[in-house]
Image 1 (cartoon, helix red, strand yellow):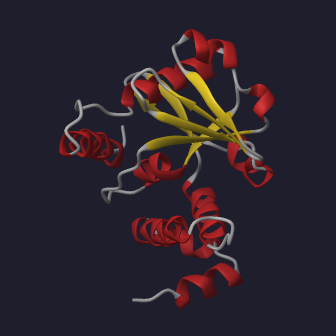
Image 2: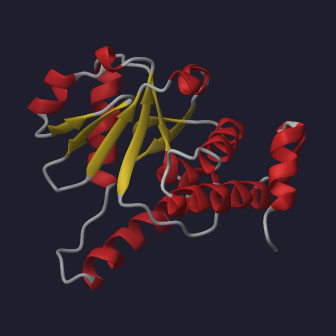
Length: 190
């Protein structure tokens, strides 16, 4: 298991504790989703903050689990409902669910993530194989999201910090940057 993921679970517990809530983590929900998607043979990739925890040794917290799928039609709704998850809303490119322990789960079928789903890497967590977006695809996605004017400003800033975190952890990713992405990184404040 990634040490960043372990630290992420610790941060989950501390975040809930500081809010006076029961100490919990996303780990049970992440494992349940991994089992469901394996049993239903559904292609997916974990993206967002959890993926960053996998690919970076730096501590990073996130309150939800983001997953990319090729289309929302492939989401195994019946299996998820049987596992206690429930749908809470649908939007243009996303579908939101919540697990029995309150962990938010967001699925996206954004076409820009199609290749990331098919080329996802496998990570084993407690004997459950999880599919995680590759570091290079995550870098491109964070830079794309960091410049999307439709996203909240704070989310865009976090995405750009996440991209820099990935580059710090994996300097070799620099060779995968486009000229536009490189220029964006160079414009970020020191």
